[in-house]
Structures are given as structure tokens and as C-alpha cells.
Amino acid sequence: MIEKHSGVLGAIVLPANMQDAYGARLLLPGIKERVPTITTILGDGAYRQGPLREFAANLGIHINADSPPLPDGKIFVPQPLRWRVERFFSWLFKWRRVAKNWCYSIWGYATDVSWAILGLAMKRAV
Image (cartoon, rainbow, N blue to C red; front, side):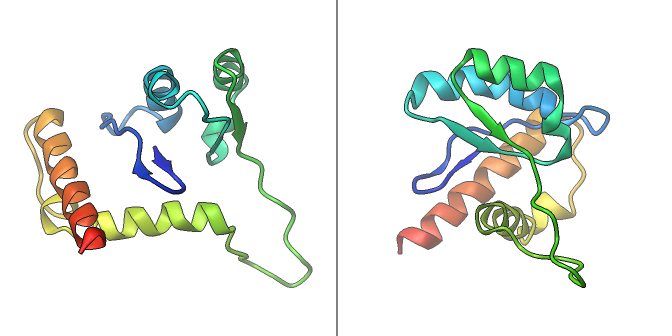
């Protein structure tokens, strides 16, 4: 999960057969503990599930997973905050090891993702 001003708040790597919403359930309690002021997270259609919204509401977090209606004749209209998240993932997958290499374990892939995020942070700091 990425915070608007300070960057990555938490990350988890899941098997391909698990939805992101499951990972959100694992990450939210720790993130809320570290950053008690967090009030809203953005998500896609998987975050619209009732159980996840209830789980987040119990932590005092609102899930914004609703897409505004498209204007007539428009196929795509970027949403500013969601666009930042999508850009982060595109930067992340520029790292060859994350995008191309196949790992034997989730932990190995999680390490590769951590190195890529560290590299992105270092580029922004310079």
C-alpha cells in the first residue's frame, strides 16, 4: 500500500490464485497501527466486497473503490490518485528482476520487490 506523501506503507506478495483484497486484510491492521491517521484507501473492483469493507470500517478506514461515471463519448478518464498507484506499479516493473525473473518461492520474489522499491526511493531522494 502506498501513501500519498510518504511512499510505501506496506507490501505483501501473494500467490497468483489469491485476490488483492485478501492481502489488504493482512496489511491493514499493521498499517493502521503504524499510521493511525490513515482514513481512506483506494482500490479496484475487488475492494468492493462487503466483508473487506466491514473489516476496514472496524479499523476506522474507508475504502474508496467506486469509479465515477464516464462522460459521454469517453472510454478512459484517469483518476489522479489511482493514476499515481498505477504509475508506481509501472515503475516497479521496469526492474527486470521483478518483471521477468521467475522465483522458486514467494519470499524470493518479495525480496526482489523490496529491492526495486528501495531503488525507486533512492532515485527520488537524489
